[in-house]
Amino acid sequence: MDAADCIFCKIVKGEIPCAKLYEDELTLAFLDIAPVAPGHALVIPKAHHPDLFALPVELGAALLAAQQRVGRAVMAAMGATGLNVQQNNAQSAGQMVFHAHYHLIPRREGDGLAL
Ligand code: 5GP
Ligand code: ZN
Image 1: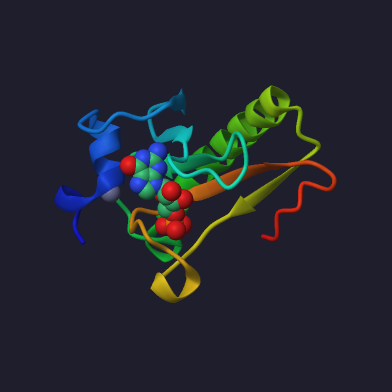
Image 2: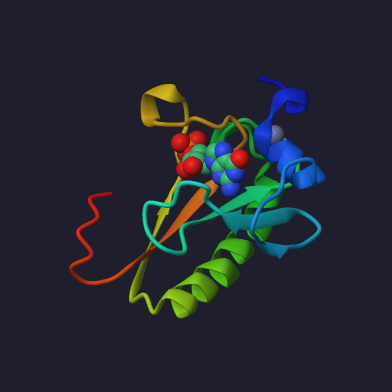
């Protein structure tokens, strides 16, 4: 799949709406459309890179900073005590959208999620 058909590129361009949480020059964060827990967020690079292995290393700091900022915010908003960061690569690993992204999933004691 190239960038023209990519649903997350369409979100970056504003062609598909999203519940935006954070944005800077290089990254975007928004709520997952099918959350596994309240506050489930996605952090993505604005540029199209299909998976972790295609990400330029130089983008790493910006993506980590966005994960920290958004992770803190969704934890505070949800009253969460923990956070899972999940990142899937290839269909066999559960990747469905082939534009690299990080799942940020707020957690609480006894919430019953098996991740
Ligand atoms: P993956 O399985 O590729 O790691 O995760 C893709 C995620 O993107 C899924 O959790 C799915 O719910 C989410 N998703 C797919 N399409 C859309 C969309 O159009 N908008 C939003 N906000 N999330 C989406
Ligand atoms: Zn894309």
